Length: 68
Image 1 (cartoon, rainbow, N blue to C red):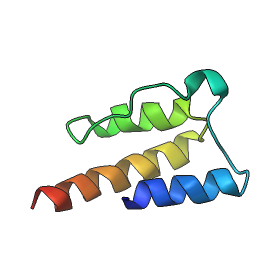
Image 2: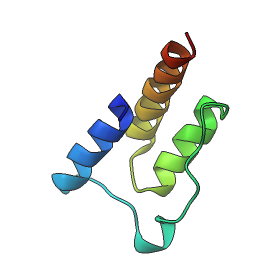
Image 3: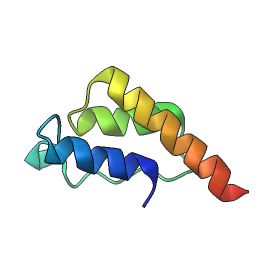
């Protein structure tokens, strides 16, 4: 599990944010997606623009490190 999913789970568990029921089926962006695509996905899940961008940057760094 990468850092983004850990943070997302913690925020949803704390009731800070979470997806609307109709957005739960959105496809999760892959590592090939841009930072903006990842941020857009997180915005659709109910996160603020700032949190979405932060998560997107974390994901892209995680992808970069995973790629070696």
